[in-house]
Length: 219
Image 1 (cartoon, one colour):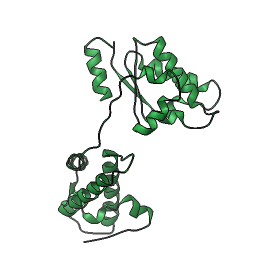
Image 2 (tube, one colour):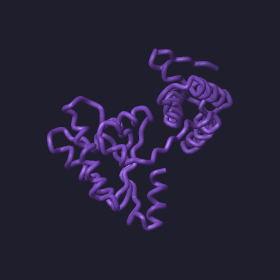
Image 3 (cartoon, helix red, strand yellow):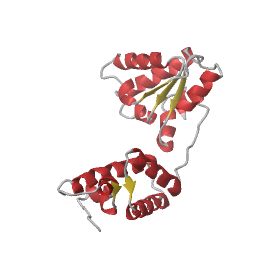
Image 4 (cartoon, one colour):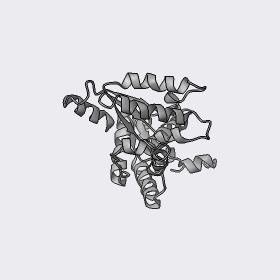
């Protein structure tokens, strides 16, 4: 969405470039006094004329009184005032954590008057994303794997867990399944093309199962 917005604002001549610079805490927070302001200014300079997108922005407010995240916030607030017609800042993060983040500096909330809430994907949408990711990697889901993945995603949505990771969870499950499929096939001497591209139910192990050391190899 931030990339699309950048292109739109460039077309409307609101921004001279409309490019996107994506950063996280490590790109903004330094290791010693004065280092943080320097790193922030470098990223702001790169984003001038476009959009500076800060992912998991609430992480800047973590830590104690001696944490350099506060210096990063102060530098960003000043830059927004000094260059308000040259750069747009977009912050992303979980709703509850972002509320705390906006309360850490008196000038933050007033400088971010527009808040957009993106609801979780539905189960059908997550399955579409899963099939797209699998196709992009030149794999396919077996009927059993697809049904198992759908049931698991539906369960996650119904439980309403906070900070549900949406498409990232799907990507992690698929990448884990691809690794397990490779291990399953490595000792086989004969296999077909379908064997190489098909992800089976047994290749999908839930994160909680893997953490507990439970490995289910089902037919």
